[in-house]
Image (cartoon, rainbow, N blue to C red; front, side, top):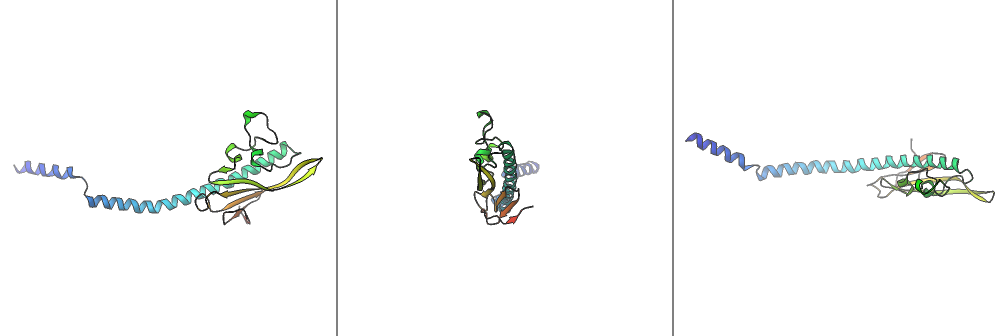
Length: 173
């Protein structure tokens, strides 16, 4: 008889599960870990977006070199859309050179907004020729998608604006 009562007592203890206190402790630990992990995740994402912005500016620089080679009478492009273009719409042209990937040619990528500014032009044989430019990358949400703004010029030098704008003065290695 005592053996039967011990078996029933053991079965009841197994079926009870966790106590409310045990669940609260586990949930508290999980919340503390999440509070530690989430800011680190946001910081890592911002760093990844900044790295993507720098690489995208290098891609714009390379596209500008290709554009200048393919359309020497135009010089550089003064719009991202001129560097982009859809290959199914026909052969490359100065308005759609097809030398830059589509998402970057729209001006938005990985939490950054890209633009080509400060274009200098001269007239050669009654045609405008752009001799220099500056491409910019500005975070769409400063602190979340990136902390710094970036610029690259026609010489290929990338600089940063620590405030997240386009006043780029600090050289990037």
